[in-house]
Length: 132
Image 1: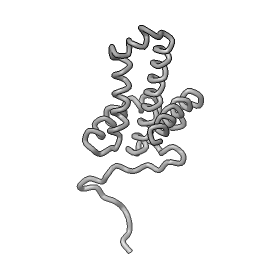
Image 2: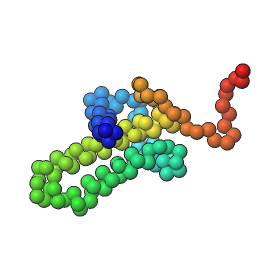
Image 3: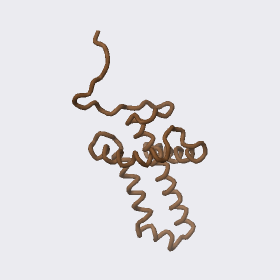
Image 4: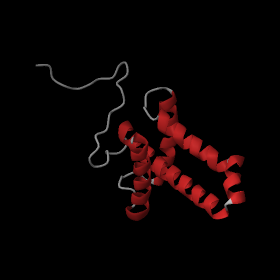
């Protein structure tokens, strides 16, 4: 069930981006600039996107690998449709994940209905507040 929801979310993000312009305040430049930061934050364990990034990487590897030639060789239309679906999912997943990362990072306000989790406070960080 969780996989189906993630797939649906990725395609929904792609659809919203194509129809309404993405639903967030992030520009394409912000999204492209966020990808290396997202990868570094994920590899350092600060951001929880490891599983999603691995799925995106695996889907990209499938589309560019020689294994993907088999469906095109025997079932031309099916092979092309399968590529379109996978590439569409990759695009939607990247839109969704960069949106989520930018909201987590605090670069943009979170999308409606989602609360952003701020990055963890490091040493020397001052958190303003009052002690009762």
